[in-house]
Each structure stands twice: as C-alpha cells, then as structure tokens.
Image 1: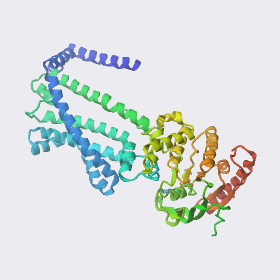
Image 2 (image 1 turned 180 degrees about the horizontal axis):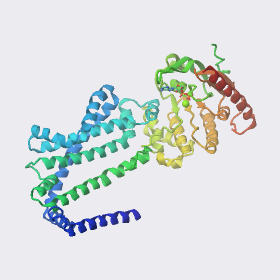
Image 3 (image 1 turned 45 degrees about the vertical axis):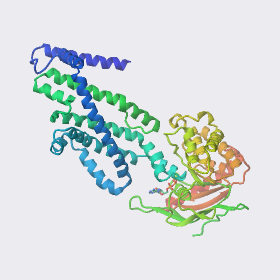
Image 4 (image 1 turned 30 degrees about the horizontal axis):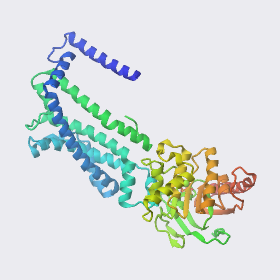
Length: 257
Length: 269
Ligand SMILES: Nc1ncnc2c1ncn2[C@@H]1O[C@H](COP(=O)(O)OP(=O)(O)O)[C@@H](O)[C@H]1O
Ligand SMILES: [Mg+2]
C-alpha cells in the first residue's frame, strides 16, 4: 500500500513538473505540449476510435508475429541444446543475430516483401525468434542434471523424458525467454511501423509517425504513453506473474523482475 | 594389491556382484582415479553401508551400480545379469531431493509407477497411496515440493524410489542435509521399511554412526585412488537406536579406521 502511494505521488510530481515547465513559457507549445493537451488528445482519440483501431491493428500483428516466432524458436532452441553441431551452427547464428537491433531488418523486409503486412511480420519474427532460441537453449541446459538422472533410473527415455521431464523442468526458463521474446517483438514492431507505411493497416507506430509529420506533439507524446502502457500491461499481466510463480515453485531463483 | 575379503557370510545368494571396477575422470588434464579395481558382493536382502572421506568414489560406485555411469573396466552383475544401463530394479535416492517440482508429492510417487505398463491405473493409485502412508505423508499428498520441509522431501523421495518395487535401493547420502532430529526419525523409518520389505540396500554416507546404525556391513573406502580399505560387520539386533552404547563401540572402531585412510591419503600425496 505504501509503495503504491509513493508510486502515485511520484507520477503526480512528474506531471506537475512537466506542467510547470510548459507554463514557464520557455519552450514553445509546439515542441512541448502541456499534459492537459496530451490527455485531451488521448481522450478524444479513444472516443473517435483512432487509438482503438490502431492499437488493434498493432496488437494483431504483434500476436501473429510473436506466436510464429515462439513456434519457430522453441523447437529450434530445444534442438540446439541437444546437439553440439546445431549449437555450433544454428546456436551461433542466433547468438549473432540476437545482437542485431531489429530496425536493421526493416530495409531487408521492404526489399523482400514490399510495403505489405508480410514485411511487418517478418520484422517481428526476426526480432523474436533469436532470443527465444537462445532462452530455450539456455533453459534446457540449465536444468539440474539430477532430474534427468532420476528419470532415467525410473525408466523414462526419449520422448517421455522430453515431454515429462526436460520440458517441465525448463518451463521457468522458457517463460523468461518468451517474456524476453515479447519485449523484442514489441520493439521491432514499433520500429517497423514507424519506418514503413503500409495500406492494409494503420498501427500505433504510424499514428506516432503522422503525429510528427503534422507537428502534433500532443499526438506523438500521447501515442508514446499508450505504447508504454500496453508494454507495461503485457509484462505485468501476462508474463511476470507466471514467471515469478514458476521460479518460486521450481526453486529456480533467478532475479525476480 | 589383494583386496580384503568381500563376501557376505551367510546363506543368502549374491544380489550384486561388483567385479574389478575401475573408473577415472580427467576434469582438467589431471587424471583422477575415482575407483581402482573395486570388488564387492552384496547379498540379497543385505543393508550395506559405504563410508569414506569425500572424494573417495562412493557416489561414482553407486552410479555405476545404478547403470548411470559406465565403468572404464570391470563389470557389475545384478542377479547374475550384466548391468548395461539404468533399470527400475535398481532405483536411486539422491542426497538433494531430486523430486520433480512440477508435480505434487503424489505425482512424484506416481511418476515411476506410470512407467510400469504391467500395472492398471487403479493398482498404481493404490500403490502410491500405500507408500505415501508408509513414509507418513498421506496428509501431504497434494503438497507441492516447495511446500515440503527437507525431511518431508526425502520421505517423498523414499516413497518414490520404493513405489515401483525395485529389488535394490541405492541411497547416496540421503539424509546428509537434514537436521539431527529429523535424521534420527528417518533411521527408525528406514529400518522398519527395510525389515518389512527386505530390499537390498546400498547406502552411502560419511557419517560413522549412521553407517553403524544401518549397515549389516560397513564398507570403508579410501581415497585417491578410490579403493575398499576395510569391511566391518555389525551384528547388532534390529531395530537399532543410533544413540545406543553398543553401537558406539562399532562406530568408534570404524571412525578410527576412517581417520587412518585420511592420514594415508595425506602421506601418499
Ligand atoms: N563427472 C565427473 N567429472 C570429473 N570428476 C569427477 C566426476 N565425478 C566424480 N569425479 C571425481 O571423482 C572422485 C570421486 O568422486 P565421488 O564418487 O563423487 O566421491 P564421493 O561421493 O565419495 O565424495 C572425486 O575426486 C571427484 O572429483
Ligand atoms: Mg558423493
């Protein structure tokens, strides 16, 4: 409770300072809109549907791309953790490409797919898949070997061992990996939407981009706030509770975030 | 070097025959001779304790008996058959609880039972209930692993190892991480269970009293290279109380010999 009050106070102060800075008149309102103007924009854009529509378009892309990234990355990560050859090839590739900021995929996506939905998905998948591979690989490698040994003595082999021991044992690490993959997917999609205009859908990134073109700073900041909120909610509601629950029950205490 | 007499006196047939087993590791270019020509026979229904300073190859020997590790040379026979891999006739109970945290206590006991196609589901549930009750945890059937105390975890691990009805139970310092009070209670339990089920048990420990309390025989191992140094017989009646004075005499003799292996080891290095 006390922590909540402190957090609320912090944001109230933050907005007050922002408001004061605007009122001081040192910066033009075009460069620095007041918090009220931003709130106004968010409110009206919520009611006329532009924000909802854009968020829907963006989230649909995000879900599809992310899902594809996980579906591709998970098995690949499991494979690289079992085979030295795959680890030295696919694993090394994933490690390298994971360091590549996902914006760097945008030019390639444009050349290959043009200004299409496919380009968006491609960038999101490239942003997700490598980190999912690496997290899965790490997770299955970090399983206490004693689980596998105990399972072997009881006669668990092959497919049974994978589905009943290795996968559940690595679950906390898999969820951590999926959370990381989600964060990457989110960032890469925003980059793609800001850089690429496509006609099939108008996402949050486009809204942000056009805010700048129209010199509507309250729109730019308003959309930024919405993007932060969506990312924060996904983390708080989708991943962190799961992650904490699993790590606690599994006794794998990786720093709680 | 001739190894000391390794046969168990009595009319029981041999359950496990360990024949000239050697195993070495090279963790960092230095060769570690974990086991050097170890031979040992364990009789059917015997409770055998393996004791020795840490690093003398107790766990390695247990793993080889379990079939989890291959010896460099020599062989292990169980019921006269060559051990070539793990099998549910020889189940292992480890020092740290190797319970699966994604299952509850019941699920853990069921794990090995589900891998026995010869049982019906109803039989499996009956057996799991029976063993959870045997270790006194029927009330904690649906408790998750992280909700159990250290002693309870090891009880569940014991039930899990017993449930598939193995003939040999291999226990690697199963009580080492527990407090003394919990341990004393488990000594009673394990003796009771052993007397009822007459399994063959190989029990690794580095606690002299524990060895004297539990073992029909106590096999003392010496380190670098891992060898059998001496074998003690403990012909005390059961159930034994770990604090009894009779037991103290045996423990004392084993402790003296154990100290001897340490001094020897220090000199040879
Ligand atoms: N997997 C392994 N890799 C390298 N060295 C090992 C391995 N297992 C055991 N050893 C070494 O073999 C020796 C005996 O180990 P262990 O059987 O665990 O002894 P104990 O259980 O009696 O303490 C030790 O010196 C240990 O470092
Ligand atoms: Mg050991």
